[in-house]
Length: 91
Image 1 (spheres, rainbow, N blue to C red):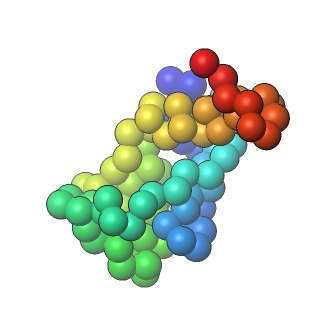
Image 2: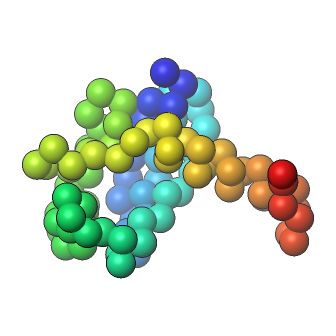
């Protein structure tokens, strides 16, 4: 699918730089306080940095992964806001 992740790099403060199959790039920030349950291991920065791509999804050891379609929507939404200009939000 066009939202398959083809590149991922961990960044400080629980951020990920991602590049999708269709060329869209951007950053996804995970909120530490929402890293609970199955995502709790991601609170450990050394573990967070072990990110890799598994079948087009961002993943970590232990069968932890993020939905690439939701990440794509977040990144493409950021692009739309940047293009609209400051203080202007798309509908």
